[in-house]
Image (cartoon, rainbow, N blue to C red):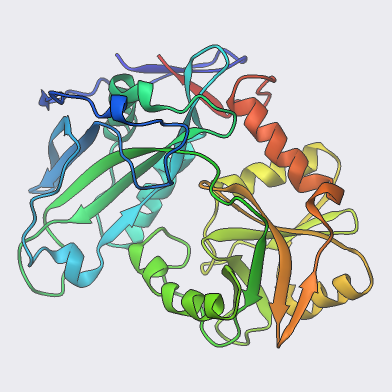
Length: 369
């Protein structure tokens, strides 16, 4: 039976037993050739992957095998019609050398929310959680040990029909791959408010983690980078007057004593880190507002000196500080990071919780047993 335990609160969570049809271990681990504390993000992967296959209306088998290239037809429907969704989550190594996951149930539920919107089959909990735990038990030594280190986990589903034709596929694969990771951004960001292109539209798929959302963001980001910015702030598709997300992250501001973030619409992803940050803000006595945030409001707050912080939140970076906001050929400089009070405290607090240095009063961390 697969189990994991919430640190400090001692609440045991148990999944139904996962039957693995086959476990094939690598003949030679690549771990000895890597310093997991110094690898580039998303380019080095652990020795093994978990795979579950869907056919005839049900998940028919699951297995673990060595990481490698996927055999695939050029006609596979995921490549042609975009039926592909994913999650991003992390495992950590605590100061007690325990393997822990950060809010994995939220990723499980969000993956299935994406699956429903993209006409794909939902993944049962015993497959998602059970496969993840079994994979972590095998590759746990890949988890970095340094202060900023984590094991980035990418569960995803792809349509695998070998046929051309616009319709929901009949076969799918659910796969989990993992990669050691350090800090995502090494310095505060310079971002450009995007007022021509948009990330998502009302009634679209902006609220799910579909591959197409990220593909459509690349060209506007390249244009911004040519102007000297690292990322863009996306605005609403109707008026381009309200900010929505920053790059691949949720967006937040500290204006006065308020933590303000765009409210969750169907154009905005319900970030797990976003929710975590807002819970901490409320705990610490900040006023939290989830609502429409106009460009005009942000610029006016900068001009009257009440815009204290701007930052993105997401799994990869946790907190990505924004130093400069560009809009209509003008750059607005924000206070130095060392003068900010809220976002650095969030970053430090979450890192301490994940490493088991301070008590997890929210029950966010789940230990892999």
